[in-house]
Length: 166
Image (cartoon, rainbow, N blue to C red):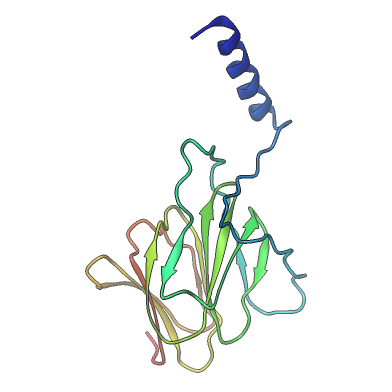
């Protein structure tokens, strides 16, 4: 590597380390950023996890579900995002922030590219539970309504919304 190139790489690293430069990674299909609402209007929230900043050379694909969740949006790290009554909400770190998924319909959702520690809030009503399942469909976690958890998404392959409690 040439001296000029090394100097440029070192300078760029120093700027990032000192926090004087920020990079927001977007892709052609990235979801638009939505400003979170104020915390006094809804009883349940998801805190957006902060993932390590990534560069395009090493960026993972964006987390997704199949079938699609009712809502999927990217927010800056540390944002408080409301989880409206009737929904189960999950925060997944990605880039310098994370995606918040809002699930409404009962059923099983396959997770793709969900990694790191996140936030799972069950704002469903009645006895409806949100369950996390491993790669074999075996339940590894369950949250009744009005409960919150901070799971590691690495062993979780599915989220299942059910009408019956844990």
